[in-house]
Length: 467
Image (cartoon, rainbow, N blue to C red):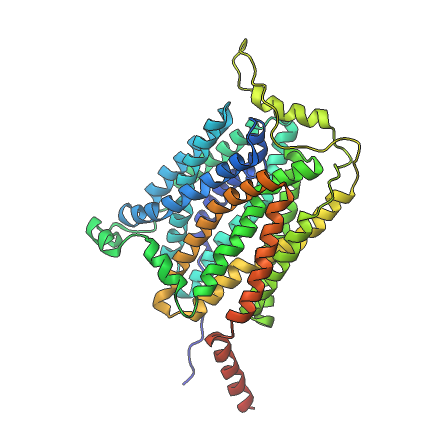
């Protein structure tokens, strides 16, 4: 009797609305990311304050994700998605009209709390898939992130070019995408959690809420504790790199918001190429454990190379024009007749007497190992976690892994901004590079072959014995 090996395929008709909604929602976020540090710089923010601004979104996302997840279990996915998307729209509109630094903070706090709706979208995909097709379905969320980080910065570049580098315009464009996601959810998305399957308030209490005790239990788990710590640490470095890259290129190369948008596209293309196809091939050929080693090593090398980018302005650099671009953002929101804000730009920018291609080329080359390493690590670590715990632990462990990821995203710009402020632009990248090198040595000692490799060797021996 032959065993049925038919694999149930993913129903793309069910998943397509969720994928499109997530992608459109993410476009708003990825339009903003390259210019937000420069937007804050235009209001006279120093690197530490910009780090605080960068931490605002993931910190509120850390709080909001479990809250929205529980609400969607109780009231359904659709209403929670719509309400959270309205919050995102409000955050972008406030960002567009902001004329003070504190309004930038308020807009990011609102958007962070609302941006936790990714967890609800993942729950909707889980509702719409079987166990066999769920991994592929959830993988589409990663694909949406990758596409967003390519398309979003391109849209930011175009909107800045058409508006004469007015930072308010991309915020309103992001708000337009947020409005589109609301309309798509309201009129295209069909509820995936029927009323009969929703949890009551009492069941929600019994299920418990996220707690630091669960995080501590994950860290001390004998099979995956070190992997959870590696997830946190690698995101501290890679997330900090993403958050402070715009400030670094402003200081070292004199790149404005448009230039930074193109740099982000370059990184995004590499990450998508890695996560979209190469990592599957590499995982089968070398195993997830070796990919973790490679990712840590590449990230260490790339971050250290990036830190020593020569301080040389790009060939088209015009110091007066850049200062005017940053100053214009401060004065754009002033009332006619009101005295414009006159604070100095807190980030040191290059002089015009040393320009050329060397600095930009160096940085782009250095970012190749950074992007490959960063693209490898998260999926490889999560894959190892799922293979080294029992089936009933997988969901909880991945949830804790995601929480550590959000925590690192909140902490990275704070630490990076403080180092940038105290020791200079190179300091955060050197610190993160050294941390990754130390963790590579730690991983080589502590992340040893696990049961997934033993199972693989057993299958190989069985196959050899049958011939």
